[in-house]
Amino acid sequence: MQFCGFALRNNLFLAPMAGVTDRPFRRLARKMGAGMAVSEMVTSNSLLYGSVKTRRRANHAGEPEPVSVQIAGADPNMLAEAARYNAAGGAEIIDINMGCPAKKVCNVMAGSALMQDEALVARILDAVVRAVPETPVTLKMRTGWNQASKNAVVIARIAEDCGVRAIAIHGRTRADQYTGEAEYDTIAEVKRQVGIPVIANGDIDSPEKAKFVLDYTKADGVMIGRAAQGRPWIFREIEHFLTTGKLLQLPDLSEIYALLSEHLCDLYEFYGEAAAIGIARKHISWYTRGLPNSAAFRKTMNALPDRKSQEAAIHDFFRQTPQKYSEI
Image 1 (cartoon, rainbow, N blue to C red):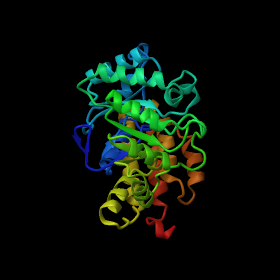
Image 2: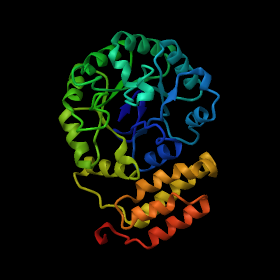
Image 3: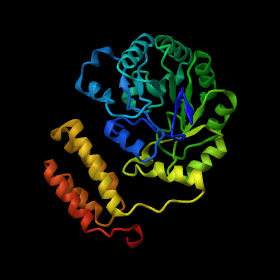
Image 4: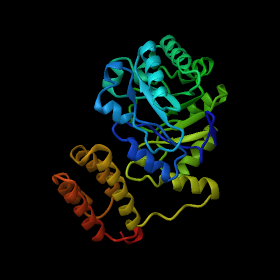
């Protein structure tokens, strides 16, 4: 797939998720078949550029191209400055966050809250596109602020007019948060109304669902978020199904153990052991959900204080678990 001037392996995207899609997760998703991975959002507040968290989020060493960095904020000038800062630091695509429904983001009129003010959206998009004329700018948004104000089509047209190169749309409003089911009619209408690539997002959790959404919306690609947590192989599953029409066999437990071990090793090295222990716990929980005795295992895991004890516990858990899903 050609996307913003880059040749991608396929049209499958890892969604940006705060606290989740760090460099170790992005690299693993790409290895497992994602065509592109977008970073977790970086604030546009220049006072935070020097923070450890911001520097870590902007660390893309060893990632395959294109490097896509998501920025968030509500002030056009600050977002333009953030775009320039990240482009100078190696970002090859700048993505603007207008999709995050979190209160701490929306309460400062950033994220999906911006969709309430179409004039401000236009000023932001124009400022960012002008700030980085050599770097493609993309937009992540929702279908609207609430069910009474689904204005994704209007904002998509504004984005296209401002020079935004592609749009990803989550099939819920901000008010929906992550409740109910995503709807794809709005995404399909946006695709009909604009000429730039449209990426569909929301509740895409299987190869069959990915194909359905692509067929229904005529979108150019799909974006996977929560379904990839603890299941990075979902990208190869979808890629295989879209290519062959056949479902891949589920991974056996030995492969899951190997992938989890690789992921954790990268986390320990990226964050340092002290910080990585807590971060590793949520990933371990996601990888082991649904497996026999996983609830008791997670309870024990959450009390372990260091890398050595975590790795030993994971080894013992997988050694004692049947190696094929068919045996569970």
